[in-house]
Length: 175
Image (tube, rainbow, N blue to C red):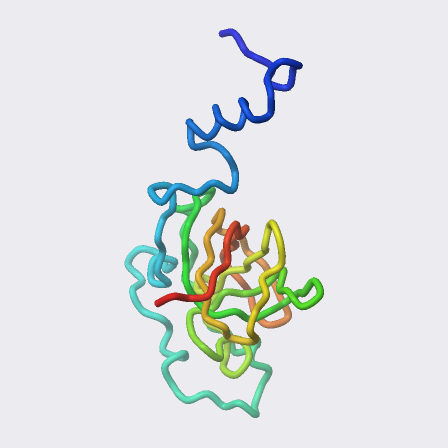
């Protein structure tokens, strides 16, 4: 099999990108058919269709640390590891660059991890922005995130997290 060194003189960057674009391989250029639309229920293991009962009841806000009340996850799914996905949820900021959020947890409902116990790890996604920080309107802003997805156990001060997205795009939720 013959290989070609695309870095050699004579092959312009434009020609190389045009060739990769024709194959659908250029990072940052997402084609709609390449993006998997996910919902929060999709992140639960097969056969587990409900959230734990602890999340549906009344929460004692003045008792223990909320992170200590996080229910255990029943597992994570690896079906979409390495794929580009789109998922909507609410921002819980973790790190900033100036006024923009660079790292945040994407949570399925308002109040998660701050005002009520965190959902199980399989219902939390750690998002890192890849190109530039996202100018958030504040805590629990509804957004849609598109980017590379993977199961990735991570521990934060607020909760254990089961998934991660390297975000190519973060947009206000359009409903």
